Image (cartoon, rainbow, N blue to C red; front, side, top):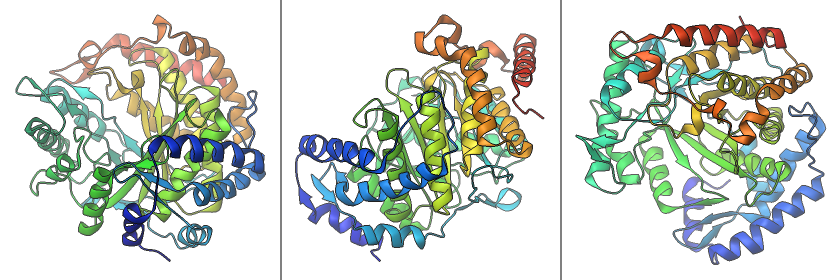
Length: 462
């Protein structure tokens, strides 16, 4: 069975072609061919699938797709090829779930199956840009105080001493180092110094920046998670290969990650499900990673809460969890921002799909598509964690989750599609007192009202 070095060698010796030829002559035709051959079909009326037969076909389809398509290295214009037997042997031999954190906060992520009563891993927070260390500290301290938290995503400092951060410059290095150091200080303040950071460092846009962020006293630790990105679609570059080689050499936890574009090269939901499954299998076979962060992002809305995206979550989660021991965390995005009711409805629909279909865990749903500066508070991750554990404890089936999800979609679907003002969010300073770290009474009332509505809709909420 090939090792990482064998695959890295293929990135410089594989078949050469232009990126355009790979996308137009290899990728797109193969997606269409394999989807048709394996009968992968999306039913708009069933946003959360419980079809085990189709899930197993999707798993086989993804293996076939990888074997005839490969992975394109943008930096060398070469195709990294994978044989069918290599893929099957790699997934069959996979036993590499990560152990994260230190001391009392050291835990191993564990795979789950559909309708699994085991609690999902709660990876809380988002890598959203903030404009001050004070807000970054408040956020990370807030995440650390959530009882269900197993790991955190830290925010990005978008400036260094008032200067904008530019990738590939010393300002990037300063932002990376300061972002991690600030998060470490916040975790210490919260009495949770051992909590792992699983988003590597969101301020790092280059391999050099990521590596600079592992300074021994304050930086990323071996027991943290190190995200290595695929790019849309079925591509990787030398920067991510360099990060991969570095993290593997030092014995760190590799987390492969993708955001397949629903409505892009893959077309609709069936093709996007095929890509998502392929990325996850490649995470196990190619990177032999310790976890994978994955989600289907709707091209037109920048979210993962539409009917098609929810179906992709459920179908891919079922396919991978039924056929492997691979640990995947769902990467979720809402159109709606903090302080809106629709955010919580979107997040609830996504968690119903994710938890019941067998994902090992999830990253708390990004508010406002992850692009609103200071656009997150501890309330949203807290809600995600509480609801995810409630769903797992309830014994809810995928069929029951689908029925509830349809009712939820009726509450937010049109607002999301129309980008209604109802979905516009507010920022941390507008919803929290920065000095006391307390949530506003108005936001607390809104959360209470949301929970009441969710319970009425049948959402299990402890």
